[in-house]
Amino acid sequence: MKFEDIEIEDVDFEAMLEESFKNEESGNDLIEGKIVKINQDDAQAIIDVGTKKEAFLPLDQLKDEDGNLLFKEGDDITVVVTGRRGDRLNISYELAKKQSALKEFIESYDETQEYIIEGEVVKKNKGGYIVECDGLEFFMPRTLSYLSQKNDSIGKKVKAVITKVDKEKNSVVVSRKELIERENSKIDEIAEALLSSKDIIKGIVKKITSYGAFVDVGGVDGLVHYSQISHKGPVNPSKYFSEGDEVNVIALDYDKKKKHLSLSIKDAHSDPWADIDSIVSKGDTVSVVVGNIEPYGVFVDLGNDLEAFLHVSEISWDKNVKHPGDHLTVGEQINVEVIEIDKNEKRLRVSLKNLLSKPIDEFCTNHKMGDILKGEVTSVTDFGAFVKLGELEGLLHNQEISWDKSKNAKNTLKAGDEVEVKIIKIDKDAGKISLSMKALSDSPIKVFAKKHKVGDIVEGKVKDKKDFGVFIAIEDQVDALIRTEDLAPLKLEEVEKDQEIRAVIVFIDDKNDRLRASIKRLEMQEEKDAVAKVNANQDDSMTLGDVLKDQLKK
Image (cartoon, rainbow, N blue to C red; front, top):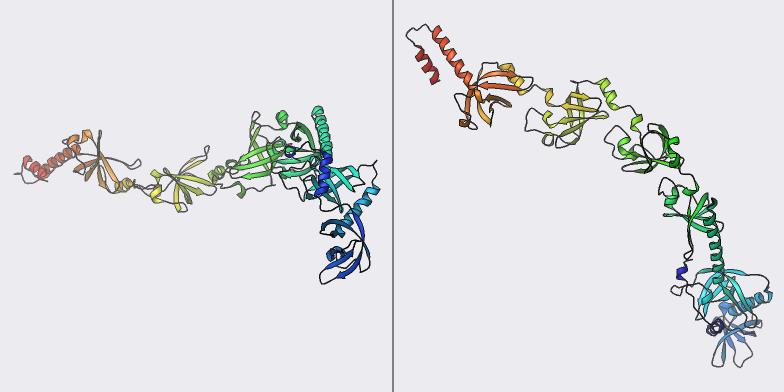
């Protein structure tokens, strides 16, 4: 009952009752008549009621539920006058039956007993309402109804107590207000007793909603809000209780005006966090039941009104867990390790993967640096690609994609590609594996080194110029550095990009992909070669100057 909707007015009760009788179509006069004729064609019966003109009665009022006539011509019948049309009376057999039944009830009414009726509001008039109960009609004044005038109350089921019986007017007055006020008084008394005692009492779950559960405590319904069900925090009441369950509760608050009694289930039980140190410790392995599953993790029940959170990252060593529901099901019992206890926030975090063998350990048992494996590209990033190797992923960095520095993961690979890679590093402690594709083949400089040696003369175009020298491109993917001091007789500022340069190889490091050349040493070498050629020449007429001039022409 929403008491804020109740409308109460100061009204003259007797005047209201009289007004009710005036506005009722039915009167109180029962008269005897005789059935003169039953006319099936017109579906009417002609009734002699002792007046100049006979009255008419619809045949439907004289039939039972199966449509059989209850009377025949010549039968006596009791009717009630409902009005007049000129000098002819309007009569009703149905109203007469109700009046007769009401009269019998009034005759048998015992003033020493209390009568509570439960019926339906069937009519509304200026004075109040007509409530029908077991075929009897009772009058309920508006001021005794506790029904809002704003709403249509026709058809509403109500309970009321009989407050007045008038044998002369053949009427019975009932009051819903008195019953409600009695109930309110009872609610106030029970609620205040519960609040003052703070006793833990048993209640019965009457109704479950999305925001809590209504619990009957001694005939009074109180609300247990969903935040007052468990020490775990707000929970869905339907997952914990069913209608009819017996629960322990304690009273929290009572709004006397709205008659709202607030109850708590969790306060009727000890808070496990008050003694959490004796229940569980960090590092403990505990058995839990999977509760609510969310995309970001799983809430698990430890029992004793304790709940812990299993983050999605703590379910498996596999970093590609898309949804916890792919690995766990509600109601499943699992073992987990406690990894965090926060008393202030009342928060427990657990891990499932900590109890599983680390994939990196198994991987290291079966593989080593230098092994060549096949794997599937799981994702491509700005810095490289991740390749799945069994239960683990290895990183294929951009610089390990190809000897061709223009290639990287994004312009070479896509998720789902199968690639062959070589293990170049394993960090067991960090659980990281570094991979390489380019290590599957010799570097361009290593290939170059197989065909060339220090002292070979090479030609190339200037590719880049730095403060410390210039890089020349000798072959595809093979660059040589000419240091500034090795440029002579050229000067650094004189060198231009794409300029053709001849130099001699002075250093080859195929392990670190380094190659150096020198123009300065090229001249020294050519002079040395020219002298050797003069010494070896059989033509005594050729001078050293001639040889050098010939070399310079070349």
